[in-house]
Length: 544
Ligand code: XUL
Image (spheres, rainbow, N blue to C red):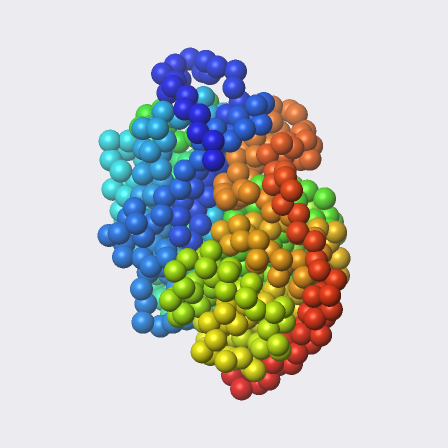
């Protein structure tokens, strides 16, 4: 992490005083809001900060960014909390001396699929945010629904079935919208809201995603939704990148009037909202651009520009994703195709039981820290003597599991070390199994996210995937991607057409000497074990 503090520019009335090309990227993820400022010409990250929702905003009472709910399938968060976090982060940037007056453009990314429901007052309030008040004070009374369903929610199985049937089944839904109907996707969530709260649905003038909601605050108007996050709604025609009339019809009435237009990620919306100029010293000429989802932004932040480049992100959710030239959807409906912020497409598979599942094992066996977890894992043999654990602590997305519960096969629950190996082997075997449809044999995998610092885990990844693994030390790949997206949008507006490969160069190189090669003997073990894993999964799914 590099911190270089710039004096706050007081000359914003007269434009830009310095020559440094600074861009701000924000990422509103499940658990935190992050900011990354880049100096494009110097190719450095000059500022980098995160604010954890639970710790910084305890009055919302979230746990890991999620509001408590007695129903384990319902996962909501608070749009007001995200807005309050934005105020706090801008205040921190100002206090830290970030040259906010020199930032040329702002972009961002958000946890995907989550939705915000705004009433008829919202657009007017956004255009006239009062800098003497906080965002929370300004936004009181603009929501048609107090809380926002987020990507961890799996309470819409019924609505998914209804939408899927109307669109002609799993493969047809995936061909039309890029993905089968998924519980967390925005369309099924909107349908549930429309069915259960018809009056509030009627009061909803605009539906935003987490990304477009925060972009709306920055832009002072209802912001468009980009093709990356738009594809995570089961409402966008994936091949044409326009709203899908049939999907609208299958989901809820009057959707056309409630959704904004679709646009490319990073496209300029207009100058930043005067609220941020007056309160925090952003330059009035700075541009607010369209945001995207955290995974699409990470495609840029990790430099996955060429098709076939693949990353595994070990975060709250574990994701397997990469760029894709032509739109090729998964007929079995497990994977997703989204619009890529770099133009074409990207593919993604999301496993909900990521870091929180690893943490559950660590807590269950009272393992002091991740170092010790890695040491224990190393005490066991690859393949765990055939021991398998199905890590469905939470309802799982891939494979679809709506009744959570972990299952062990030929694995002793009392053996802490074997269970440490089993959880990570399971996560990697599941990725190998469920990414087969992509028919991609990556030359290398870029590993990122918190757990990617552990060499023992990365060796398991290399061996299970039979592929060399390179670590990318971008703890905030989404926020970095968003900053680069802001730069791209700004350059496009200036009439340049920058090449993405050149734009990301220098920001996204793998950590030197971090390459981990697969061990041929171990690879062989996993070639067999993946078939056993598939059989265990089939058996477990039968009984759910
Ligand atoms: C992707 C998904 C998650 C969230 C996490 O489809 O649901 O990765 O984007 O923020």
